[in-house]
Length: 229
Image (cartoon, rainbow, N blue to C red; front, side):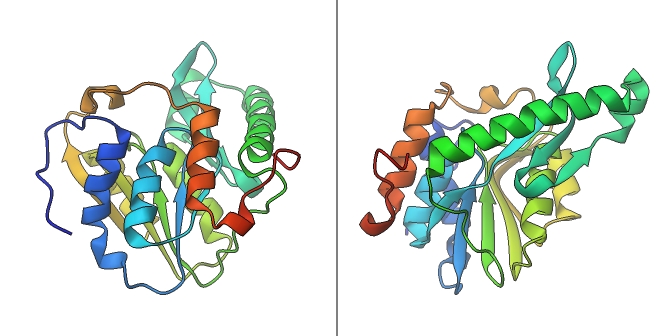
């Protein structure tokens, strides 16, 4: 695979995924490789990675816990199977009571359950024990959501966990290096601005697009039918 020209911005998530796949090419010969995407925006990126590495693709469902009234500000995140990471500094600074945190956690757990049904149908999550797992998203700002994802995967005793993104903040990459075995970013930037700044096309990824890409990446025998979906 020829080395891509690394842009200052990515045309879209699929192009970012192709650049990221090249940065991950040293993983191509790893046995028991599994690519996991954080939906929705991480799925188009991860699809290109999985295709290039000839690896299976699935989703890892994680939800940010937004501060009430400031939903873009993360006070933590939760992942499948109950893994939760809290930003104690933000919680203490804003005086957010545990009752509120638990209420928001419950709401986001319900959304995780909905997405699991929508994206996988009756298909179970992949088995991760003793696998090399690459967790992909479309960007890494604070790292709270990805931290929850790593914690979720770690509970399943994989051999190796790599975090992979097209663009990461210096702070976010530093934070994830403390919890993951490897962090790969095409661009590591400071200041980070907003994630959308690093993409020419940053349209919201739909549930339909997620399903389409997951089905395109699956062997025909594993694609859920309409009843299962």
